[in-house]
Length: 274
Image (cartoon, rainbow, N blue to C red; front, side):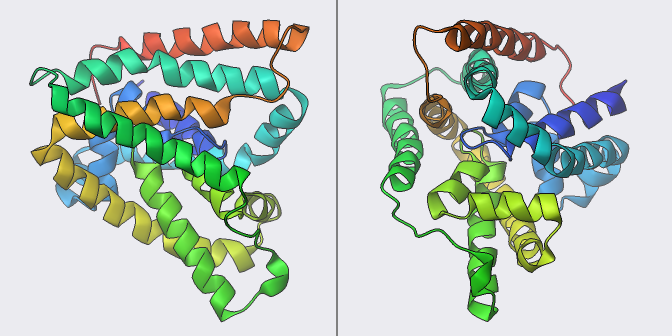
């Protein structure tokens, strides 16, 4: 059963990286396997050996979520944007009580925590503004070459660091950089002109990001989680769907919001972390 959950957790983690505004790291915290997966990303051999089969199933699920659900998520966002976004918003908000509980488990919340909380909100909202203002021009595969590949490695590196951090959406980082559509097309068509350098950037970003977040968490857990909570709340902004209002889509979307919140809350009540 543990390995089955590893597969499901990986699947959700992979799908989360396809949807702008959704943080895969947040779900790892909700599922109770953040430390295990993060240690594996940081190439901690001892942790990898100890949880090898769980991580194996998690990896299979992640790849399945990224590749297998690229078409499905595109279909859902195109046909049921409000319901899909509100469901995932519910998942994010439903996990907040657990994140707050973890943050305050070892020491009491202090007034200084307000500062990293605000910074966390600003970071995510800034990404939204970058996207709205078209700060970065959209990349196209027509400009293939060494510098193109180098830029893809850079974008992927930054997005991968975000993939490890709860509260920040790697997909939305790609949206802000103007390369999200190109990445999604490459995933659907298995275009290694883009995927090749992207994989290199992701591998370096995940390892370095995991090592960095683990180091900071050990020394400043409460401060880091305060920023994470700010980023989680800020991530609601890019998830707000177009067309939200007094209509049937919003009504069914609110039901999806409740279902998502309930699912995350139930997951967060799980007694035994991985």
